[in-house]
Length: 205
Image (cartoon, rainbow, N blue to C red):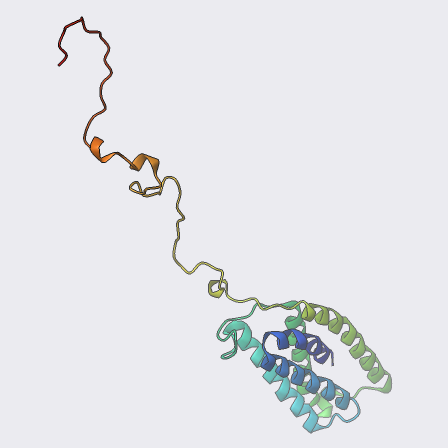
């Protein structure tokens, strides 16, 4: 039930990112909440096996999404980062699977709880419900997909780009004042300053 509550709070965020993902989270939450409600009064073998198989499936899909990324959708093939909400939910699902497998053992192997023990377990279960569901739900509301930085649109594409600087500007560019020269003066050294005077009538070479 705690895992189902976390999935309820995670549904709107995932729905906004991709409706199919939101529908999956809603279906997962509905199954876990309904299963939790039925497991207390009924708890037959069919429900236990269904709970084991379903939660193993949830854990498997979660593992794939974190290691390789889901194979389809807007973020296909991009692994997601681990977050508090999914780690809490995964821990709860592991506990469900382990507990159900233990419950399928013969009674002489695991014993039978007394009335007081059963009540203590029920109280403990609801304490876990609050202790895990509250922070998990809060984290689910703040969920945002984090993907491999190399695939982000705003990240570097593997090439080095140098923007123009004063040192890297093309020396022949018309915007470079030093590159603009008078064609008539090309190859002509600047006239040397006269540092002497001429007498009247003296010819100048």
